[in-house]
Image (cartoon, rainbow, N blue to C red; front, side, top):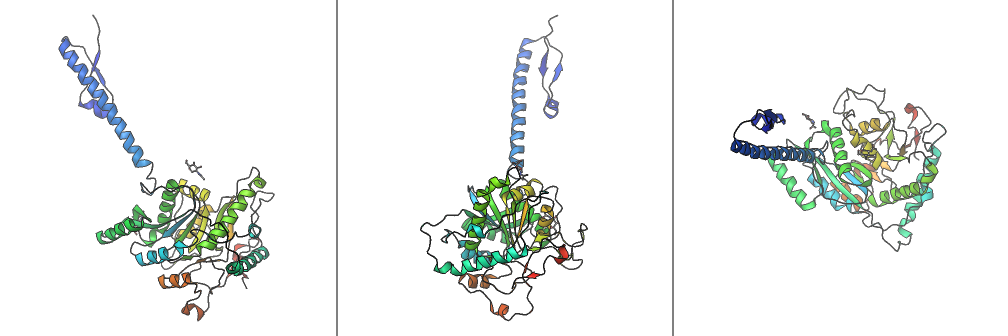
Length: 412
Ligand SMILES: *[C@@H]1O[C@H](CO)[C@@H](O)[C@H](O)[C@H]1NC(C)=O
Ligand SMILES: *[C@@H]1O[C@H](CO)[C@@H](O)[C@H](O)[C@H]1NC(C)=O
């Protein structure tokens, strides 16, 4: 007996994805039509699998954790500006768009001298050597001298075009249709909103918001540095860019001196090593049992992190503990990495209330729309600031001391 086995298909085949074999039958016509069914079915089956596969890839790849599927391309960014903004804060966003986000584009300042930039070397045991308090003080003085002369310096012949892009991150879950429509209008006008479809925008979710934003931006853009600010932060973007460019150039120029060590990765801001863990109020933190104080972190009014650190956070976002404060979380996430260069800088006025106004401040936290416009017009201090109550002191960071003595060397 000629044993011709052929495959016939029934409905169960599709779900099981496995054709089953049945006994041969006598009729050729029947066999023929069965064969046609077979081929149609197999084709349909593989086509189905293919489509499923494609859809899964589309769903998984560009979305990642944040669920942000698409953003306008923009190659070769030097600085990404990430502004955490509440859905309704359109006035703040407009004030920023009309003031500091326009600074330094193009950059018309002469280069900030590279010799005024500190680069840490690795010590004998592979730790980055932190800058001493004396050196921090000298460098601040050098910067102040440079900035004071700036208006009298010859403008450079060539303007520098520095690629900067900004985004206001906003969570889109559970917002009213009215606000949603307003945001859509704002987006069509400015195209600078990072709308996070999977995030409920509440202050309890700020850390989750930070993670999703860094995840989305890192996967969609190539950039060298990211500055995270709030929507009540003012940045002297031209000066900050100039200093950051000099740091970056110096690092590149000196990269061979690091030999087989990893290049330092920048974490730049105003650090605190002895912040108390609150047990009451809005910022109470019930889950921080790692230490008596929050592990040294840069205050959240503004800090800069380099590309590799963004990648580290994005790549590990599923594994990281999210604490109530996003800035505390960032400090803790980066704590064990040995190539992190923590650049403490009194030019970041990022304390919970503004410190006494100083012209050397580059990042100024807690400024409303009116203050932002004042600052943009060159007015340094607001009336309420000049009538100084007890403002927080400004300090250099003493990395050689235990954390409870980190912050006693005051800037005079
Ligand atoms: C955000 O906060 C709300 C309640 O405050 C919570 O239900 C939600 O799971 C949080 N997470 C995200 C990602 O939105
Ligand atoms: C993050 O993941 C990407 C993709 O897998 C990889 O190319 C990159 O080197 C990773 N970066 C870090 C710092 O882990």
